[in-house]
Length: 239
Image (cartoon, rainbow, N blue to C red; front, top):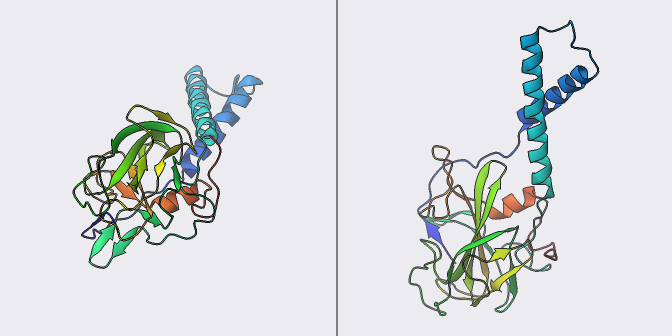
């Protein structure tokens, strides 16, 4: 039980970009034609210049795609943790802003990708349901990590209800780095990890992602799956 608000109705952002892939392919084709002289006499100087500009833009897009492909992702919980015990979405008359994984107190919790620790809460005990200083509308000890730009959006992750926090603000973490230990602090009925992912805001004020602002919480388990990670089944990577 953790981090729920009245249920809003929105849709989750898409991460596919076929248009950009087509543009990159077209730019590469034009660049190849220019390189072997096929454009000479077939295009005006202005058109040739435009083609060169398009080629440059395609190269940048290719470099960005390569950099994104190099980013490593990891499960926040050990292999064998099993399926989520509570998923992202409506829960009764409220909305659960993350995914819960039922793991024992003391289980190492790991960062899902590279980033920098932004905020932590370390002073909460079991049964203390007062607000967390790590993230609004959440309780217990927790860690917020800033991951920087991923697929055009600034991304953040949250790890909540921890029994122990092993990082401090400003620390750099890698995918698979231990950020704390699972626990039962805050508004919780048993040991587990509450894992959250936020888009374009490190403090979305307890709101699900909205298309109008392109900010808010998204389904973290689904987000990791789209990155090739099945949290709860896959083992964390070695940082």
